[in-house]
Image 1 (cartoon, rainbow, N blue to C red):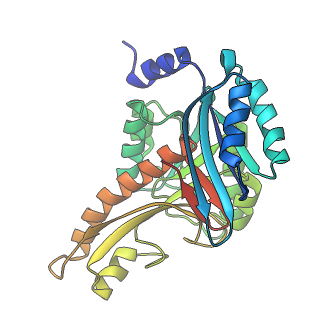
Image 2 (cartoon, rainbow, N blue to C red):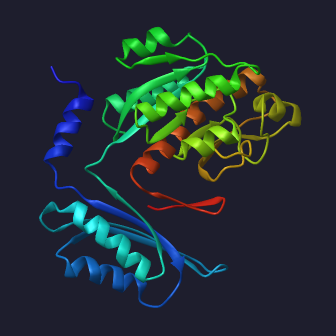
Length: 296
């Protein structure tokens, strides 16, 4: 019997491929009409379009998804980059026919790991999970039980450069498009991120910018907050300061201890990370400076 993830993949392969363009640049009159006209003239059919204008900076943002004529996505992709440049716009074009290759980085906590894997198996995430990488061996049996290759690469302060070199070699060898830090309790160095040069999504267990760094639930409890949160963001060289993709909060009171905050927070972490990964894979996130525009 086919697994659900395999079944959903087969269904998607039978669907007409679509193109998704994310573009931004200086606002000017007629941009929406010009982009729509370009797609129409090439025989394409727009399925969804959304736009936003940063009134302070005068920057226009747009996400448009369309079916190219006769499913010819490669020709339209190359042509759209040229057209966007002629408009003075920065662009990124994705094809629904291409599935991102994703690696999960984990440590010992398994709640986000299980949630992402199960959502993937149910066909919720349009990607291929191809590797689980961990600095601890604890989740090896579970990963192999899911049918996922597990790579144990220990990390200490002394071995970090060598360990990151092994991680990079693995990611490059597997042609990974996205790394998801599912409560990976190590800081990726600026050198690692620079050499990888592809997106890394992290889940931080606080409502950033509050309580960055380690033990945020303990920090929140000591401060007596009435709300705790979780934040999914792109990892950058600055710890917990990358562009934020998604956040959510839960109410707490003086009656909640640290363990209560951890328990409530784990529920937030799972849903916030999953939503951020889904939006990224669907081409709904446009990074601009240290912020994001997340399209409907």
